[in-house]
Length: 232
Image (cartoon, rainbow, N blue to C red; front, side):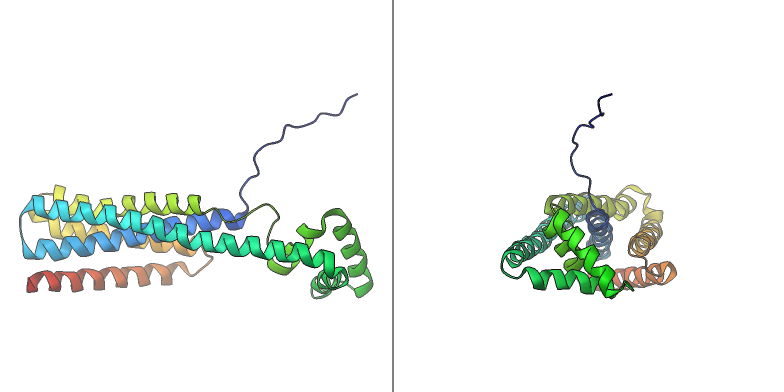
């Protein structure tokens, strides 16, 4: 019987890569909410012209989304460059300092409770199977062939920042006049609570603390920009 050979598929993202994309999305949404509401409160406190308020909010939403995307692209690109440089360096060390690289693998397993003798056997077997992949995994927690993708992070940040900013923009410009201010405040507090919750969940942080922190920052943002608008 012939063995069934599965077709090769595109390598799936690692957990670290998925977490980085999610992080960019959560941060983008949070920034989109706060920057847009900041502009809306400043302008709405200075004028009641709905078209002016809408244009100011929409302009800031677009500017924030593209700014967040470009920032994420630059940041993650730098991280990717660093990872590639590390892999290149380790590739050279495997040719010039095999003993040192082998010892690094041994030390890794000894630090996790494996005896030196057994760690040596594990190191020899792993280095024989995939020397470069083993070394970068134990020394830098990297997976060979997997680098942080700046385009994923940029797109995630772009979409989430634009999506986050829509909530306060919608509340301030679509709700009836009597509901604009309270509706916008509620929309902001609910939105930043959600981003705080998601950030804590994805980052294994304290959910309650993250939510409260985001709410406080949201309230302060609204107060400051409202005060600025009153001075205009």
